[in-house]
Length: 164
Ligand code: FES
Ligand code: FES
Image (cartoon, rainbow, N blue to C red; front, side, top):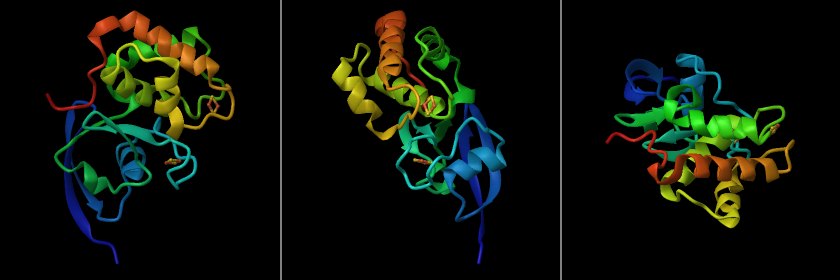
């Protein structure tokens, strides 16, 4: 039996207040309740990373957590932050995507990595991407895109998704 609860959080800089089913997943909340369809669903089992978004600045697989996990927290999807534009531009410049299904998760994972490590090594990038699968690119172009984004942004970093 479903139970309706009130969820209050901040999504992409705007406060949100919605009645939701207590069992609703976070990915269902952003896609089906808020209409933010760029967060994708691939596996629903936590394996592919297509549903990756930022919760208080940290990557989370939104198919694995309840929407209520976002209560009084900040959610960032790919639609939500101008701070991600430079990473997106780097992916375009390096052809870091083909079908694009993995790309939103890749970019948000890159944003968290570059916030923590403004000039990551190849190995750091590969390690960061371990939870994001891409069946198209072979990863080299994605790694090049993240290096390019790091060079473009320098020490300023990518502070997205947390309430500061
Ligand atoms: S849909 Fe969430 S990890 Fe694949
Ligand atoms: S670009 Fe197609 S899955 Fe990554």
